[in-house]
Amino acid sequence: MRLASSRAALAGLVLASAVAAKDVLYHWDVGYVNANPDGLFERRVIGVNGAWPPPELHASLNDTLVVEIRNSLDKPTALHAHGLFQNGTNYMDGPVMVTQCGIPPGANMTYRIPITQTGTYWFHAHYSAQYVDAIRTPLILHNPDEPHVYDEEIVLPLTDWYHDQSADLLNEFLSWRNPGGAEPVPKGALIANLGGNNTAKLSFEPGKTYRIRLINMSALAMFHFSIDGHTIRIIEVDGVYTEPTEVGNVQLAAAQRVSVLVTALNSTDNNYIFHADMDTDMFDNIPDTLNYNSTGLIEYSPSAPVKPSDVIDWSQFSDIDLVPLAKEPALGFDVTYTLDVHFSQFTDALNHGTFNNISFVSPLVPSMFTALTMGDDARNAEVYGKQTNPHLVDHLQDVQLVVNNFDAGHHPFHLHGHTFQLIARGPAPYDPTHNPRPSAAPMHRDTVVIPSMEYVILRFRADNPGIWLFHCHIEWHMAGGLNMLIVEAPDVMQQRIKVPQQVYDHCEWAGVKTKGNAAGREGLDLTGAPDGPYLYPFGWTTKAKGAMAGCILSALVGFCAIVWYGWSSKKSYHSLPVADNADDSIESEQLDSPAGKL
Ligand SMILES: *[C@@H]1O[C@H](CO)[C@@H](O)[C@H](O)[C@H]1NC(C)=O
Ligand SMILES: *[C@@H]1O[C@H](CO)[C@@H](O)[C@H](O)[C@H]1NC(C)=O
Ligand SMILES: *[C@@H]1O[C@H](CO)[C@@H](O)[C@H](O)[C@H]1NC(C)=O
Ligand SMILES: *[C@@H]1O[C@H](CO)[C@@H](O)[C@H](O)[C@H]1NC(C)=O
Ligand SMILES: *[C@@H]1O[C@H](CO)[C@@H](O)[C@H](O)[C@H]1NC(C)=O
Ligand SMILES: *[C@@H]1O[C@H](CO)[C@@H](O)[C@H](O)[C@H]1NC(C)=O
Ligand SMILES: *[C@@H]1O[C@H](CO)[C@@H](O)[C@H](O)[C@H]1NC(C)=O
Ligand SMILES: *[C@@H]1O[C@H](CO)[C@@H](O)[C@H](O)[C@H]1NC(C)=O
Ligand SMILES: [Cu+2]
Image (cartoon, rainbow, N blue to C red):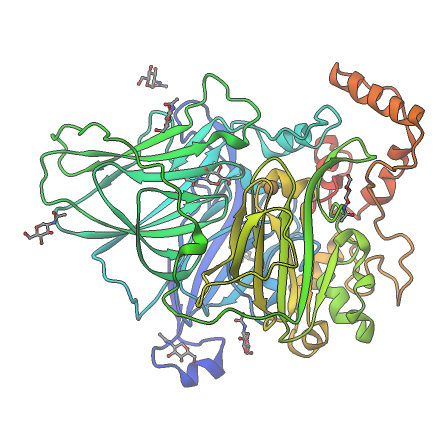
């Protein structure tokens, strides 16, 4: 599948580089196929070139990864290389209505991504909740100068697995019938795309050391990974090398990656079980049929018995205690933003995730185009529209984000375009009069879990001009609005970023403008830009609140006839220019949903 071409895109880099960089080319025809990985239920999934799972992607440092997508679905799509900096290639990042329009059905898009990083990443759809339909695959970036020593490597993606289609799950989640915002609970877990009675098996040879690249490609579930009878050492987290750190088990939230080294035992007398247990804290109910403890087999010999589990080590370690191999001092900060995370009931009758009480709604113009076309006004955050919750940072500023999680669940937050240093963690809210004492060489990563009622302090240097999404990686929460924008150095973007014609063409097809502010207008005239949904207005009369409560109650028993004025605002932000068949009700509902276009 891998074809190398002799010419490299980054001519400048190639001149300076020791190893010949190459284009690594993949053709992906993205379309529907059927699959039954747990042996329990055959369902429609989104596959590649007529098969599922999609092929793994591999490239090396300084290569250019080229993935030519053909969209054979009946709806738009877009893909995101999770954790890649996309330095100078903001338009290849993937989130729809942030850096591109959806790739129309029947159209192609070539993602050309210069590889400046190494480690374990993944590639997934960034449109609606499409990746729940299994369009996701590991993306491994090899390092010709690998600092850790091992004999072989194993890529082990872990995912939760749903039997229903993502569009149906999303409609259930974002529904007035679900005022508490209970997330869809998966039917089980897949280890290396196998589940149910199809057990994943890893063959070990005595004495060999394996690098296992764990990737949590879940929509919801958090996993604990451990191997009976073996010790595991963490060496990489989210593409960042660490000093080898021995742990009893590895916790991975959605979108996080960890590489561990495991040295095989010297004897082939026994086989062993490895565990990938889903953390059930996030599940509102645990169906009797749900096996949340998934296991696989470490096989030394097909005839050997399985040595029963000793006690599983459930000790917790904190990622903030890891030490990166490349040590850099803690950044200071030139600008700090505090982000309070809540889930609340909104006037559109839905339960939305929010940063500072704003639930994300896509603008009418992809924000990257707003940055590129608004001249000096691009440095005024207002032009991106208030529903995108834009936070402006200037070129080369050191940025601090203080994130307080006031919700009852944990959330894995992901920043596009950067890794961030983990400066501090503690009980929320963070008290700004207490100076954090970061470690001398803080760990950094691209996705951080914040447990309920805790805060984290994150810092990064704004050295990558672009529009970068900051969001919870639980797919359901993202769809529910838990996203915001970091608008990084729009003035420098205007000098550096040259958008390929294809990206304009896709917007044109969808009737989406590629210039102007969030409303597609000039200057600060934001007439028609998305506005709302709103938190329950505090000024509401008791009677109105009673009507709303009654409405929610009756919604619970299946009907809701009262129309209150919250609904009337629906039209204004539901009227995004939608790319396709508006008469397909499920589809248009999904596309119209607040953040449905991401
Ligand atoms: C990758 O490119 C950088 C920058 O040009 C160069 O310093 C480095 O040696 C290259 N590394 C490899 C493995 O090609
Ligand atoms: C689109 O992609 C398909 C499949 O990868 C390829 O066969 C076709 O030539 C491409 N079309 C264009 C116009 O590039
Ligand atoms: C899976 O295995 C269990 C017992 O291990 C068995 O009861 C069940 O019937 C099996 N299911 C399928 C679909 O084979
Ligand atoms: C993957 O992430 C989800 C969501 O945070 C979590 O519930 C699940 O346990 C994780 N899986 C692993 C194997 O860590
Ligand atoms: C396996 O045997 C070698 C050589 O005797 C020894 O160095 C190594 O520690 C043993 N490995 C384990 C996991 O016991
Ligand atoms: C899953 O594993 C955990 C940890 O070993 C254990 O406490 C729990 O009882 C197991 N649950 C089931 C249903 O096997
Ligand atoms: C968000 O709304 C809650 C009430 O739902 C309020 O307590 C809180 O102060 C608000 N936060 C911000 C940052 O406005
Ligand atoms: C982006 O590239 C510039 C050079 O053009 C470099 O200074 C900066 O460190 C890079 N940032 C990231 C995040 O790769
Ligand atoms: Cu979340």
